[in-house]
Length: 613
Image (cartoon, rainbow, N blue to C red; front, side, top):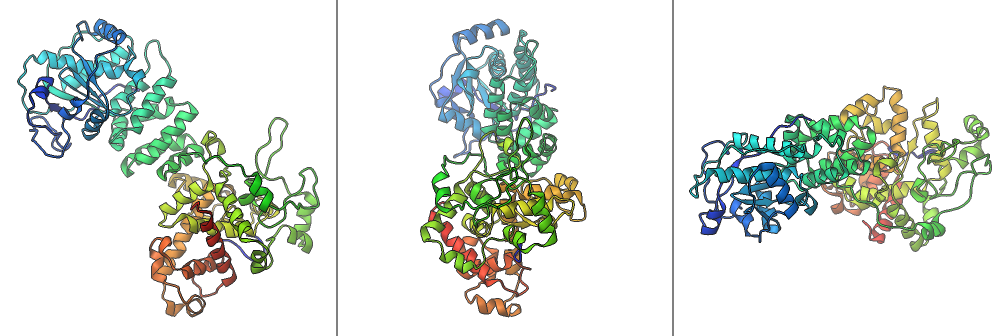
C-alpha cells in the first residue's frame, strides 16, 4: 500500500496400445479372464495371464448389446462391401470401466464393439463415424481369422491389422470406400484416444474445417481419457499437436481444451503442450494453468448490490474533471467494488474497464507533496483498532462476504468466455497449491482492502506505470512490484519462458515493471502471488529459532515456528498474527508491526464467520 505501510509485496498415423486375446464365442463359454499386460510387456508373443481383481476385455461384454443403426449399417456395408448383421455395440458402466482399465477409447472382440466413456449417441448415429469404421475393420479382421480357437498372444500395437484399421477409418472419413479388409487376426483390438482425435482433426474432401460437432467429440474424448498424458505423447509423435490447438478454434471449445490439458497432464506431456499454449497468448496460458489448479467453473450467481449498500462508502475526491471522482473511503478499492485498478481508456467506440486517469492538477499536487492531496490518495484508515471499533460484527462479516463472493476482476477477462470464477474459488486453489488454507489468504487480502480506497488504487497503479515507474503496492493483496519480480511470484500462472521474456522475474529489466503492475492489478494473478509469498515467508519462519527473535517471542507467546512448515489450517492463532506482522515489513528481522498482525487476525475471524472458506 501507499503511505507509511506497504504490502509485500495433420498427417494420419496410428497410435493404438496393443491387441488382447478373446472372442465373442469365448465370452459365452466363459474362459479364464484375461488381463491386459503392462505396456512394457505388451509385445508380440507375450502371454495373457489370469489376474483376479483386474478387468479383462471380456468384462465389457456384460452390457446388453445393440446393433448398428439402420442408416449407419447401410452406409458401412456399402463402404466395406459385406454384411455387418452380427455387429453389436456395448455401452454403459461395465463397458466404460473395461475400456478405461485397458487404456482404450474403444475395443473390439469378435463382432462386439465395446465403447468407452464420452462416446455420444451422435457419433454412433453418424454414417461417417471414423471410430465405427475403425472398429468395424477389426470386426472383419476377426471374421477373416475364421476360427473359434484363439491363442493368447498379443499382436504388435503397430501391426498390419491396426495399420489397416487406421487406413480404412481415414478413407471412410474422407468419403471414400474402405474396400476389402485383408488382414486376419483373432485378437481383441484396442483403439487409443489419440487415434480418435486424429480422425476428428483431419480434413475430408468435402470438409475443410473441424466442425463444432467434431470439436465436441475431441473434447469429450480427451476429457474422459484415462491416459491423457500418453495420448498427448502419441499426438505429438503423429505431428498432430499443432493441429489440435490450431483447429479447435471455437473460443469456448479452446478454453475447455486448455482446462482439460492443464488438469490432466504430467510434467513430460505438459512440456510438449506448453509451447503450443504460449503461441496462443497470455489468456490461453492463464486458462491452461488455472486448469492445473482446478479453477474451471464460473462463480455462483451473486448480486452484490445489498452488500455494497451496507458496507461500501460513497464519498469521492473533489476534483472530478470528466471522471466523476474516485471513491475515497476505507474499503472502496478493487476488493469492495470489483473495479480493476488498471487505467480506464475511453475511446470513440469502446471503453475499457478500470479507473480513470488522476486529474492533472492532482498529479501536480501529489508530485509536490501537497499534504491534503497526498492524504486523499493514501491509506484511508488511521487507527486500525479505531476503524474496527467503528464496525459491527455484521458489517465486518459483510465486507468479507462481498470480497469473497465477487467474481474476479481480470486483465484477461475475455479468456474466461463469460465464466469468471469467484475470488473464493481462486483463493481455495492458490491455497491448495501452497499448503495453505483459503481463509488465511482471504484474511490478508481483506485486511489490505479494508485500508484501501479507489483513489489509492488509481495512484498506486498509475504511479507504477508512469515514466517514474514507482515501486508501489498494487491489487487485492497490495503486492509491491519489486517484491513480485524479485521472488518470482507469478510462477504458478505464467510459464518460465514467458516470465523471462516479459521480465516478470528480473527486476533489472525496465520493461518488466509495467507488465508486473498489470498482472498485480488482476485478481487471479494477485491472489496466487499472495499465496506464494505467504508460503515463502512461512517457510523462512520455520527455519528460524525463537532465540533469535526475542521481541517476536515476547509479543506472540503462542508462536510455534515449526508449525509454519505444515498446512496453515493447523497453525496456532499467534502464528497468524506474527505472519501478519511480517507481511508488511522485512520478514523475521524481529521488528514488529503488531497492530497489523492483530488487524489480519480479526480479518481471519471475519472470513471464517462467512462460512465460505
